Amino acid sequence: MRIETQNVVIRTLEKKDAKRFYSIARESAVYRYMPDWADGRAHPKDYYGLIDQYQKQSDNTDISIGRSYAIALPNTDEMIGSIGVGLKEKLNEIELGYFMSEKHQRNGYTREAVSALAEWCFEVSDVKYLILTINCANVPSNKLAEKCGFKLLEKRTPIGDNQFYMENDSYFYYRSYRK
View 1 (tube, rainbow, N blue to C red):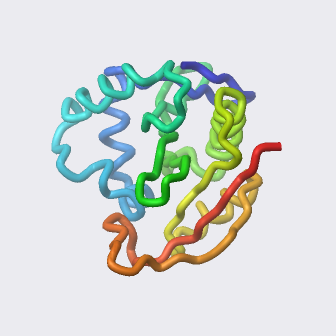
View 2 (spheres, rainbow, N blue to C red; view 1 turned 45 degrees about the vertical axis):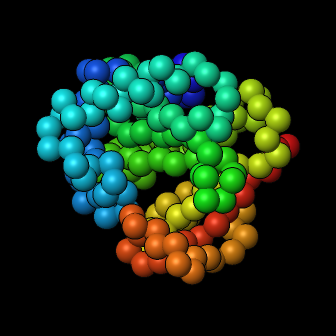
View 3 (tube, helix red, strand yellow; view 1 turned 180 degrees about the vertical axis):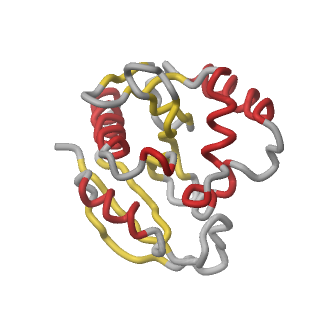
């Protein structure tokens, strides 16, 4: 899969991305909210299996099947972040997720990637809306959600369902509807 925007490319993950995936997942701004991308992976090669799995699903237009893509710079093809889509099973809804290298944050790259992948999801499926669930403490990501047209519906604090990757148990629940 490949989606090109003005400033980024969303493309299938490749083994060459393993080193960048490894380093970005360990950056403090990423790890703070998404430690599951780093934990249990002590070496870049530990991402090979994950990359292989996502490569197999890359061109599948069934957006309920979880997959992630590289967000890359068009001129160098360097991976600067990741974006994905799939079924959030506990909610039975389709969720987008993303992270961006600290070095490339606040340049509009993530906004372009989120908007482009959301548009693609609506083009290839009949889903009525997409969701984002974002830790309440992650102020930049919450602002980004709104810039991308996602509407904040509520703050949620699950009972008996700890969100293991969140600083607290509360998150903001956003939706973006098909236009």
